[in-house]
Length: 255
Ligand SMILES: CC(C)(COP(=O)(O)OP(=O)(O)OC[C@H]1O[C@@H](n2cnc3c(N)ncnc32)[C@H](O)[C@@H]1OP(=O)(O)O)[C@@H](O)C(=O)NCCC(=O)NCCS
Image 1 (cartoon, rainbow, N blue to C red):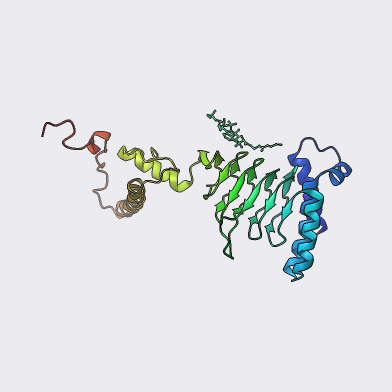
Image 2: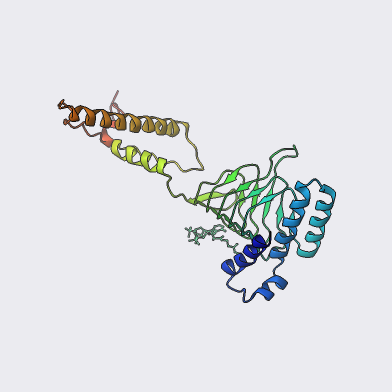
């Protein structure tokens, strides 16, 4: 527990250049006070002292302007800068090294019980005033721009801005890189469609590309083994596919 508190204090120095010394941080950072109160309230909540936990969280809200439900799961080195107006719901889950600024809501969009608040994975940063609403995941190291409203899953490392939130950068995952290589090979503009505009035809082609990639790999392995056994016939190159191969047969025709 003490180690966790030390880490929480250190995380302020790492993420706020204005922090000068430990005493200043301990006395002047409501975000830190709220996190420390939450660690206590969550301990009470999980030990079934629910009423006491709620009381402590309400006291913390009165003192800091930050409302964290005692049931929310919060990882290590969590930092809330400035803090006023932050709301974190009961079923929110927050990984390690996450940063929130003032006015952030990690809220729900339904009144039904069960998981209804977002999960923020390690290293996520949520800008001032952003609203992240619903039981989806914001994956590792994603950034959410100030005043955005996000209601859908955010990919790892992506930056989301605006209302509704849209991804402005989307670093490719290994699987996506492979797809892109395959797509380039056959001259298909696989990434012409953005994440905000899911297209069933593009998705079907993506699946075909994944399958072709698997078949390619398998064929490579078969050929290597055949060569090892002195069997020839794998040196012949497959014909390249070009953009023109995908143009409609009658395009520009007079029929
Ligand atoms: C979203 C954010 C992380 C992006 O930072 P970045 O990766 O450096 O991106 P850039 O600043 O280069 O901006 C990229 C584009 O997104 C736009 N953009 C950036 N933040 C935006 C926001 N919050 N809302 C809408 N558009 C935004 C920029 O205008 C730019 O658009 P352009 O390409 O048309 O010129 C950052 O702008 C942000 O909002 N951080 C939160 C900081 C915060 O809340 N601080 C509070 C301190 S008290």
